[in-house]
Length: 310
Image (cartoon, rainbow, N blue to C red; front, side, top):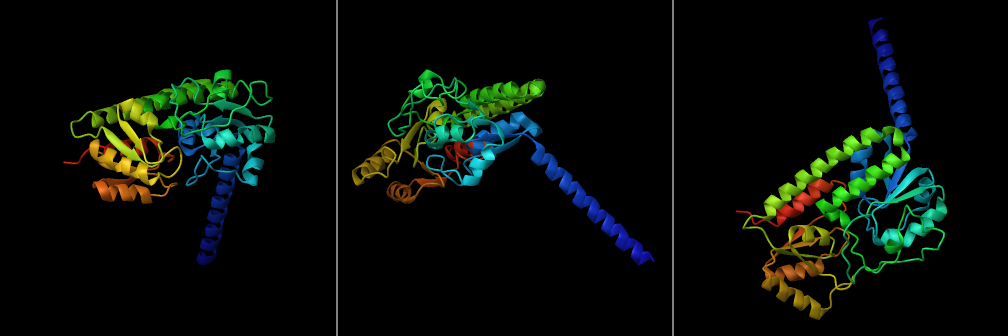
């Protein structure tokens, strides 16, 4: 009798857990969806949106946002989103944004790069279209934004820019869900305080006498980070391509001249050229991931690597 009772009790507990999981899954699936381009933007959006939205990245972890093509299923799922937050100028957006608006014409698009002091270079040639085209929505781009070419797109590598991005996100959330405006504003303030704290930690680290003033990187993804803290970023890529032998020699000479100690490499790129330079100069090859969801941890780790350990 006792054994029968225990069996019944175990069955009831299992059923209860199963029902709880079903309810939790249903609750998650019932949330309105916001789609963003990359993982760092998902980090900022989730920090402000909290539990009110399910935030999904179009470019998954481990993929390059310069060359990624969405799957057919992603295009189907996009139509279920309430809004799309773009990071601004990354290659995926330049190639796919018109197609995404065609696929989901009801979707509201918001540009989180608005108000950022952009860096221009010759290694990022982007698609552009006329303001009269049907997909040149005000919420995506203004006239100036549409006609700019050669924008350095990695705007999220800057703590200063991160606060502007956060401001654009909170404005977008308040526009699409005004009833929760107070909640979003409180979470926005909390995120900005955290970003400011991160910035102060980096400023302290990089102001020490044993901090590097220059670094080398395969793909120039830290241009805004370098501008914020007065650093010289030296790119191994030459106009978006692998360096020629003459450019490689020039990089080795520059590395020695500027006393570069660290060469950063990202997981999406081949590290062979970085290792060749490191061997010739005695520098360290350090893996980083500027596309990580853990924005704060990643940007702090980058700063730490630029400080000589005693």
